[in-house]
Amino acid sequence: MVVSALAAWASPAARPAHALGCESVTFEDTPYSICRVDMERDDLRLFLDAEDGERYGQFSRIDALLSHEGKRLGFAMNAGMYHEDRAPVGLYVEDGQEVMRAIPNPGPGNFGLLPNGVFCFGDGEARVIETLRYLDEGPECRFATQSGPMLVIDGELHPRFLPDSTSRYIRNGVGTTGDSKTAIFAISDRPVTFHAFGRFFRDGLGLDQALFLDGNVSRLYAPELGRSDIGRWLGPIVGVVTETE
Image (cartoon, one colour):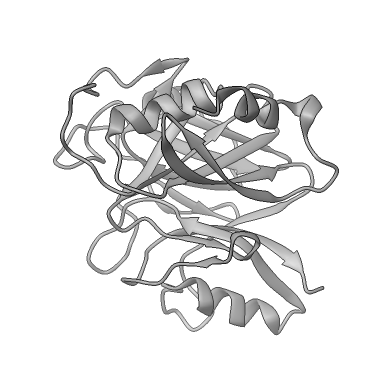
């Protein structure tokens, strides 16, 4: 169990000099891939529709289109649940424009397993916020995506998570630090339960707020780790844009 190393890595005082950083870690004998985004230095964005009106769908398509601007994709991950047409299930805000409103009601599937939450970011900050709190506070989000369930809420695991659950999938999610300056994305490298995944964010990474993004379709693009996962076409995608070296 690599807890001390992860805690030091997540601490602002221990951050390396560079911004975006990805690495493989182990927690409770389970391997995870993690990418840390410095909100003050990294250009984190959400991607849904390209200029031609078609969904991006794949990391490679985003990277190819960025190359025409002298940029590239430094990291990316699927960023929330979507319908068959790959439209977002819940709240989706891209570059200040609300594409889909927040859904506060319980419903079928993981998205409706309340409390769910919103990943809200822009202007050098990022927050994972429980949906009802988001609606009450009305924070300004240049980018936002809603998903569910919440993994960690104010330092507590989601109340519906069972330690003896047998439901195991490759899962991905995001957590934010208390100062809102760092977002940490993680994907399990083998199937895990919700309870185990939540413990990883809370106990392994020391984060008080974390949100489940998806399971089964979870994918990661991280050249630093030699990862460019392929599979079914995606809906919302979150990623960091960097200059071409």
